[in-house]
Amino acid sequence: MRRITAYLLRFVSNEKSNSSLRRKGCLTTAELINAERVLIHQVQSHTFSEELKALSSGRPVSTNSKLKSLHLFLSQGLIQVGGRLQHASKPEFQRHPILLPARYKLTDAILEHTHLKLLHIRPLGLLANTHLRYWPQNGRRSARRIVHKCITCFKAKPTSRQPFMGDLPAAWVNQMRPFARCGVDFAGPIFLRNGSHKVVLTKTYIAVFICFSVKAIRLELVSSLSADAFLAALRRFMARRGTCFDIYSDNGTNFVGAHRELRALYGKSSTRRTVQQILTDEEITWHFNPPGAPNFGGLWEAGVKSAKHHLVRCIKSAHLSFEELNTVVNQIEACLNSRHLYQ
Image 1: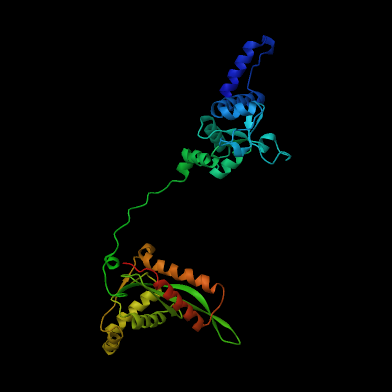
Image 2: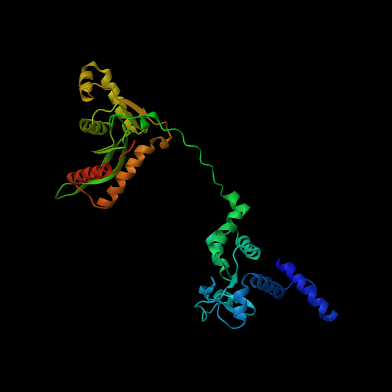
């Protein structure tokens, strides 16, 4: 657009001048700058006619104008934006950019040219470099629109379609006794302070049990990630909340080990009665997520996130003793269970 205008202006100038003064060959920088000024002047005359008329007669912009806050002034026939950089040692157009209308072909062409010149720069960088010479109205929105319309940028960052979410499992939507079906996961490690004179830090974990029926949460402190420690926490949990019919978990080694140990205990006649007494004469069915599918455990992963939300903000970087940490964990459990429970 600028080069075509420059050739037209050269043709008009050559027709008016003598043959010795006619310009030939490639366009010069001065001709391109002059063509750009002519284009911008035409656009401003069409878009900002009232402001241009007021500034040409030496009057300020009307108070009803949307451009009043820009402190406009006229320089070499073009409307420029005022500011507080008059005494800065920068070029004139950096101190006072040229005003351009929003959603206009010339404005979009300048933004597209800058976007390609700067190797497909992002919207904020595009706007910052455009402000070195021009001030487009609604510049941030215009820069985002130009980048969004760029086919190269669109192909370089494709957006994948979100697949349709599957139906919720039957264990999640059917009403049962609380904690009859639950999911379990571990949070941690948390450093525990042991000893009074010589303090030793040991790792401890939190077993998070979440009910599938009402989404209630039970938090149990576990000394390690071994199967024995988890079985002890499971027995404490069932002693308080009742026996679980189904337990869902990921494929952690401690959960798999606990599952194998329970099956081994059931297979021995000498311990079958003891285990049945512990599990209130009901066997536990353990369900493992498919390997490499953490999305199956979104319910108890959300429970871990909720517990960590309070835990991180309460203890921060402090190292608590067992009694202190157990108190905090129980308070967090009470806080989580005081929210609205739902099916």
